[in-house]
Image (cartoon, rainbow, N blue to C red; front, side, top):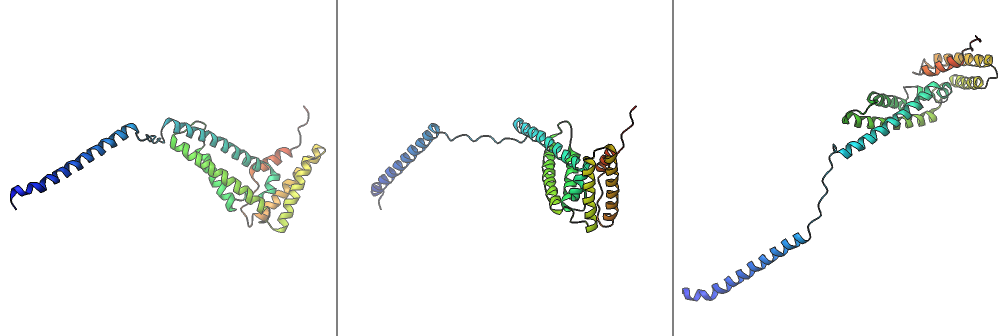
Length: 225
């Protein structure tokens, strides 16, 4: 084909290329204008766990954990110091009971992390987690003790438990110091007998604070000076 005849084909192709290029240029300019007129909303920056507000939040959680620990320690201390509670919930004084064992472990872990002043961040987090675990374990141990009651004891031992509770109630309502002293002395003997009997099968003992309560309340009053 002669070169002069190619002009009839080349010219339409060049026009088509020019039209396509112009259309693409207008589309690109329109996109840039839309982007400037309507910018995408800025994403909030991720908050670092070490940011000041995160540190403040951790301090609030740590303060709440201290209150939680104090409440659990107080309730557990009240239980161990009250011989009547010990007899009504004997499973809480038996580390062989799984729920009681889990609580003792969790409480000791929280106790090990307990501080009077705000600790480093990693220890504060561990303390918060430990007190939450201890709180759940304490609730579960109390519920299990309420269900078990004296079921782990023999019939004779359950009779001793009931006798001990009655003697302690009698001591609380005694009309005279002599009656109170006699009731506490009898309760002390019953608890000692219960420990000897249950100790052959169970790792159960009357907590020392409960013993001290009986000794203190059952002690005869000092004569007037």
